[in-house]
Image (tube, rainbow, N blue to C red):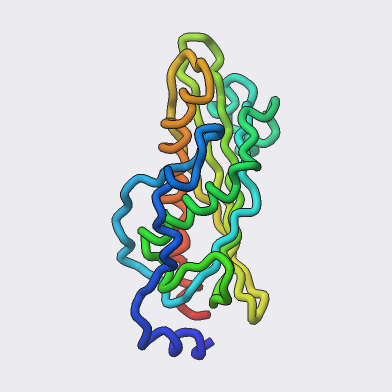
Length: 204
């Protein structure tokens, strides 16, 4: 699709201004929201614009020790919803967009305008309380993303994984904020690294 690459050769890298609004201005204290840590811009930017959409965000509890077993399908061990994050989905979407804008994976990042590619993301957090009271809580994050070319319908799928540990005693939502933030940041780094190094995207 030479028409895509040609269109951006003369364009300077731009980002949508609303994406860099500080998170604390758009979020309340009633829900956990990802707060991106500083990120070094990529050395492998893609010559395309992208529209970002977060379609799912949720935090679940899993059976004690589920993150330590060989079964890769952590979804099979969910015991319930830990935090209902659906009401904060827009804030999470903005935070993810802030991360992507800072990383500069795409020449232009938007939320609602027409772009070369659609980036559709689903983010799930799994909290493992550990098998004994002496074990730290484990936080596992799956970020699933699909890049879709709206002109051809062609798509590519990716998964980013992140993990962190929390306190042995988890007293409430506030104790989850930092380890969730760390695990999400790790998953985002993994996901966008895979996207940036996918050689198929250099020949769309």
